[in-house]
Length: 399
Image (cartoon, rainbow, N blue to C red):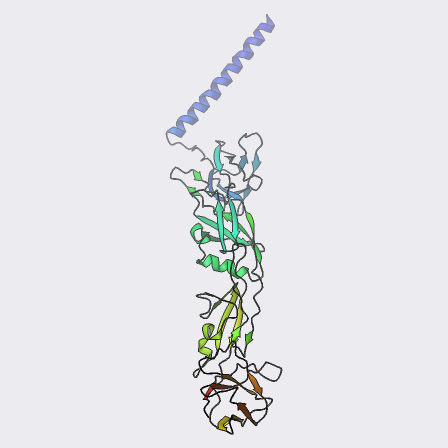
């Protein structure tokens, strides 16, 4: 009987305590609903995702700590406080190859908030077209309108539109062309987008930058070595070359032994001036155009005149007197018989390296022939500058 009485008194005390706790909680809830002293603590809010530095920034509100976990919510870690009062969560441990979820909660308000992190684009392929000097894309989603690129030794990403990346006339193509002097490697990826806070306070994490693809920007082949034949007034070009006389704005196909009269007519004749010609190997289906060879064509000297060369016919011969010829200033002449024309690229010339008079037989130069006289080409040495053969002096033969 005594034991039964003790049990009854214990049950009575427990019931009274339970009723007191329930009543107290009911009063607090009522006070909160009526605007009493106790106000509910706001839940934590994600405010920014940085896919470059791989941080998630969270506003703790009135919470004094922020905790995060994965979708399973089994293990919780504490976020680091940032300098601006928000909390930072390292997201580098989350693989970008698939979508992921981070869950958040505070120490006072433990209501769980979820942040969805998108997977990066990874199915596309990018290649460098070494002939056109642009990028080519395969399996690129239609929604992607911008890419980013950087040099292999730099981490400064530059953004360019997909439209410009495939345009050989774009500024981007010009930038790639600069890298082709020595060759380089670049990294390319699809561009990401900034996160956005929605009107309801939820966070749109945006778009991750896509997978990085390393591309080799191949250097251009060596420039052709082009020389001037100062006597024949031609270049030792081939059909595999092309040339420009306007600084590379336009290009014309070259040919074998290209004549200066075609490529640099301004360097010949009475009002001749120095001319600069750019020459390179043409692009093919397998290789881009080569580096440039810059050729300077000197202005042609004027034809001999006046007392430099005199002539007369006597004793059945035609006589030419070279008054100023020397080893350092040689002259030359050729005979073209009547009915023929002078072809500079094929003519055979006889040199005169001393001041003297030369006779030409009537058989060699019959009446009606033309004798052409000029100053001989000068080769470049340590003491002399290269000179083209001069313009020609024309002499009509008669007896």
